[in-house]
Figure: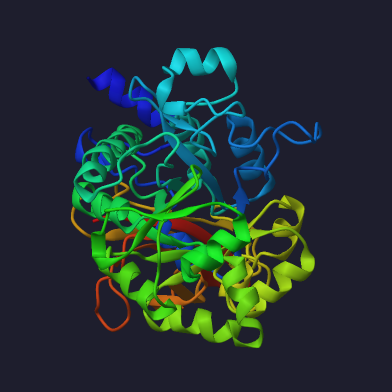
Length: 461
């Protein structure tokens, strides 16, 4: 057990000694969904990893593959969007549609049979385990926006509420089992166009963040949908949440949403932290698009908009106030997503340097020494505090504060002169008004004279 514990911590890049068990299960070094949702906006989401690509573009990795997710995170994308399906033997796989190009349903094949036809399709568990280390790098990264799709009529005959509850609860359970096995409950947002699927997520894993999806078709009448898609639209007996549910040909099953305020109410009813919004909803709103996003923000919901193809679409959606923008153009997303605050932005003068690497000029004019900022206790702490240590070779005015991921000052530990010596400051994981801070990644920043240093501090509860 001890060897296993040490090996897992080493592979995760954790360099502090902590006991096995609850501390390790918390995976304290990882960026979280809360960090993403509190970061500057808009942030870009890599659509299916590195953009939709089924092989037509040989310069990019195939969509929804390990290569696509790794490349997106390596290039600087903070969150990738992916799609989940389940095979006949219960394996959760990452693939966009319920069926292959010849209309063979994914759920009719075992995983081995699926691999024989599409060897690039990964298990969701493999994606989780291979991508989780990206949430431990210095920059915010490694978050997954995973969609549990509403099963389509071609591959699923669950047309009643009772039938759907059986199949949906089993699918959700399999997805959650993979997430928990990887210890990534804090790094995944589960989204779906079905409030019943998100209700299952809330019941089975309330700690995992949720996002309800809205397709513009859901705001149209059945007649309008039939005319637009040239497909039959058939009312089915499923009536969850008091909604009318329809099969659209054999390729879609969706609930009709009577109004946008009703969609907001549904999102809150299933405990969503965000919504996944079809860009056409904003395009149709035109000049009123900012009001649509403002209504979501007023309800405490973040707006993630899909799927942007070019700069003009990005500018329109960003101008409306979208928090996240899913895009097929990864270079565009990297260029236009909001930058994270640099450590230098947290301190009023001079260029910040990383912890243990900042030059320090003593008041006596002696040689330059390093200003080191470190944690003097285990990480995460076992007593609800974080102990920060720094050493001064000479007297100086010192400012030591904690900042959240958006660059907002949270707590001030030191603000005034200090004599030469070593210091331990205790942060009791509260803000300056005494309120407990939320779990997540914070930045401790110190300035002493002309020198500066920063250090990541992770809060878990």
